[in-house]
Length: 328
Image (tube, rainbow, N blue to C red; front, side, top):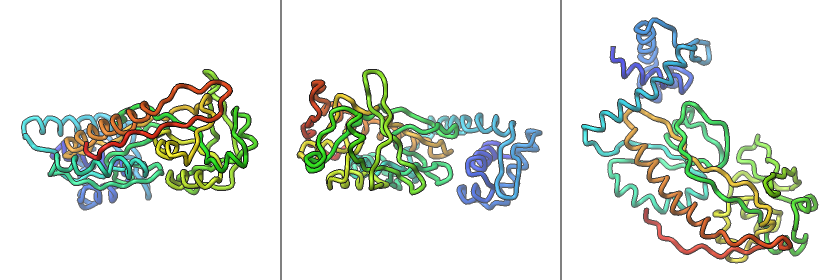
């Protein structure tokens, strides 16, 4: 029995929740997947899965082997790369937030692909939360919190500063909020990436404390582009990472309000799997994304940070960020 191959198959069954799905992922017949897992169970002398008609679940011994197996497969790929001299190759699937994909990742891709000619990239961009394992995504750039998945490797990249803003026309009609409590008389645009999601209450800083407010609004959108467009149209206030609206604020299309009560910053992380045979490509992709975010997002938002507004000020305009090239 090829123990390393059997471990690879076992890990894919654990991640996909079924023998047929694992076979599709590995381009292997489901019967071969079943046989490999049975041989591995016989070799180890323990059951690794609890089988049902619809899904398989790991036993306690299976959970232990899964944790060890993921590390062993990653180390095996790392070790093979030490002596093969191989360059990163293969096809990787990357998921990024829609605006970061359009404004940051896509313009920088030519330089990355030129540096790694044996790598192909499938880029998808949306504002929903994807399940990397279920959807076969290798790496995702995620903004915001969420439960950590023990099947994934998480690499923190920093935090994105948030702002509250509205259009000049909206503020002219409804007035400028000076304190968070003023928002109860205003309308917001709700953001819910999936139809079944609920729009979360907004949070504001009050010294070291956080204020949570459930606010009303008539419009709900599912992506950042529509979120900003609705704000420009005067439909209400939005709460969004500063980088996303820096240009609009600089051009006077949007105005930042409640600058002295900034919302909490959002973590930005890389989450990725470790597939045998793709480790070198994943490392190259993750390192490129880390540098890209640091140079094109975090550094720019730091440049945009103006002195904090005095307590009696409700509006602050932010200067437009410097134009940057598209190379990486």
